[in-house]
Length: 78
Image (cartoon, rainbow, N blue to C red; front, side):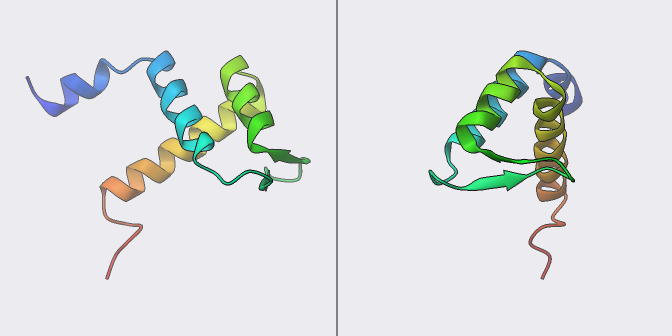
């Protein structure tokens, strides 16, 4: 089985769980701003990701872009 086939089996629920776990790793009390929207605590962001609202979808999108860049070595280029 190729890598591409394995990756294609990852569904929305698994991606959402991954993003939630990454958000849980943030320090408590930290707030994150999204675009020109309000700031959100990690707990608020977790709820938004779990509910799938527009802010939650944006967080998922940003996390996936980060992971793709990390995979390609764009984050830690020397």
